[in-house]
Amino acid sequence: MDERDKAINDSLVRIYSGIMWIEENELSKSKFNDLTMKEMHAIHAVTMYDHKSASEVAKELHLTPGTLTATVDRLVRKGYVERLRSADDRRVIRLGLTKKGRVFYRAHEAFHNMMVNSFIKDLDATEIKTIEKALWNLEQFLHEHS
Amino acid sequence: MDERDKAINDSLVRIYSGIMWIEENELSKSKFNDLTMKEMHAIHAVTMYDHKSASEVAKELHLTPGTLTATVDRLVRKGYVERLRSADDRRVIRLGLTKKGRVFYRAHEAFHNMMVNSFIKDLDATEIKTIEKALWNLEQFLHEHS
DNA sequence: TCGAATAGTTCGAACATCAAAATAATAACA
DNA sequence: TGTTATTATTTTGATGTTCGAACTATTCGA
Image (tube, rainbow over all chains, first blue to last red; front, side):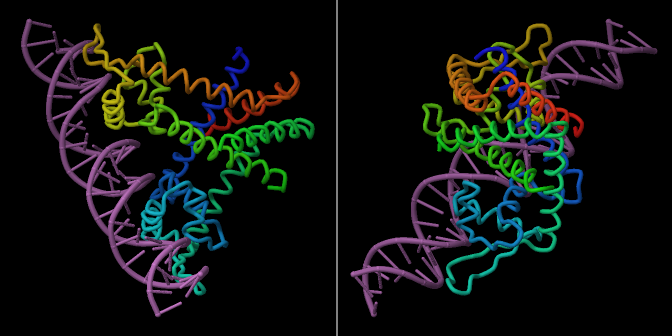
């Protein structure tokens, strides 16, 4: 790995941990400061209106069923998520966001918008294409290694 | 946020969680499967030969002193890290990697190399410049918001 | 209809985290 | 120099995070 590659790697590592930290920070300063990062990701996985089953959400988050139960318990207690018993298959629990959950979802979405805008500001169409190519490369790599 | 920005955002989110998952996966399949992601990050922060103090490492990881103590306890027990009492200021604990810790560090580094190579494969010098610009943008954003 | 499969919950153990109190060593200053 | 303040780390108690395995309820298949 030459100097340039090392610099890119270091930048990626800084960005990775920077994003984690800044999201945590924004969260703690907002009115949603009763949420942890993990809970935030869970709310994002539940999505706005899909009413996915508990299993589907667990799979998406790479969590075991038991862990998801515990997470949902907390999010229900805090008022962000609700459990909806499925009518056609009564084993299935479908998950949805409460009004409070949806307010948070949109706030979090807005933050992501800001971040993306910063990421690609000052870039012209050709440059954006390059970014897309690189991101696609990285997604391919992740896909191949899973 | 238009379609294109949304696609980039979604890609970033997928990459973010993809990296987390793939690193966890590689870890569990390797001979270092007694390590968690958090412990892995801690070992990375300790670095190869710097012998940073506990406070410095805690700050880098955004952890409270107490949490770092607990983490180091575990890493010492598992044989990756050692505590070195500082000679000039006996309050200070300096942290270092054991031989086992350094072997892991290099293995993890190699994985990152692979990832970066995938990221920038097929890109010419101009395109790499664009990537560097975008990464710099993102780092600026993170810097401004902290 | 009865056994197998599926969806989710419960339980016990280890890890992760923080805030606040405690301990130990050094620095500051009177 | 001796006392006080500051700094570095550890300890403690509480809550959250995670897994695997055992358990419950429901549906599917033969």
